[in-house]
Length: 206
Image (cartoon, rainbow, N blue to C red):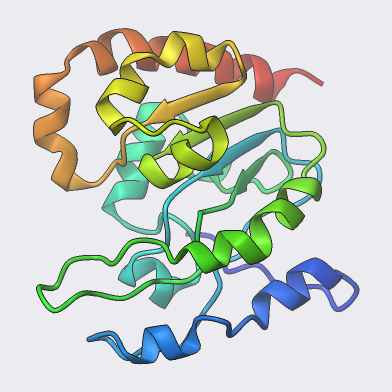
């Protein structure tokens, strides 16, 4: 696993983002009572944007995006090695919220706080001028990047229309979606081969 990115002192956006504490009171009130730790993983040269939901507890601890079983499944879906996946010169990983939101009283992940996207997302997107393809992973990312208001299943099922716009909607690679994958075999049989071909073109074209 790669080391967390070191924020250069002259990188104003990353320095500001890394210092953000806007959600500190919200996080302190969760069952985990944790402090913010923005997980920052992008550089201006990136061609592919992976737009996820929010870091989980393991990612919060590691400071590296998708440093968990979901990441292993996602890399398998994309046909990328760990080294390829974490190459910031080609791939930006920008979730809808940069910090772990915490757990609710039942131990489930809380959703990404909308405040994070409201403060940061437009600025980060403007700092990624070379992105040619976006992976919208999960409902929150799909609503922001596609403007969809239906469920994830309907959005992912219409992947051809969205891919024509340069945005590929994906379900979250969490183990909780294993049943979803069984019920929708077209995703692995049809969507993923087409996505891998598109990724090869985007990531190898100089």
